[in-house]
Image (cartoon, rainbow, N blue to C red):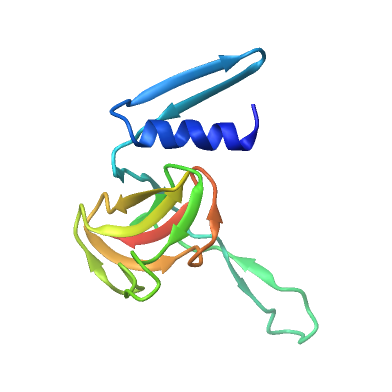
Length: 151
């Protein structure tokens, strides 16, 4: 099965009421599944990495690790799918969220494009965006951290 045949199958599924189709041809198997427009991200508590600090005794000394308290109050919003990360609905639109923005559970954080489908990723918790971990237009993997949120 070549790329054009797969593309035709995707077009057929998109233009029909099919929710899922499985096609097997020899050793090749493809599952086309229509998902909801909104995909829930995976949330994982974050712990802080140890801070690095230069040794005050010598300017050429290697950095020494210092212990820091875990930042147990940060939540990572992770990608539920593989695709392309977009901060806004179009190039001319402002980003859905920026660092220091306050979000409520259910607010759209970003869009992930997967197989020509735009999937809105919503906040699973209310809080403040502390960090955006990916760039606009970047290809992302499943379970890749996207945002850090302070609830």
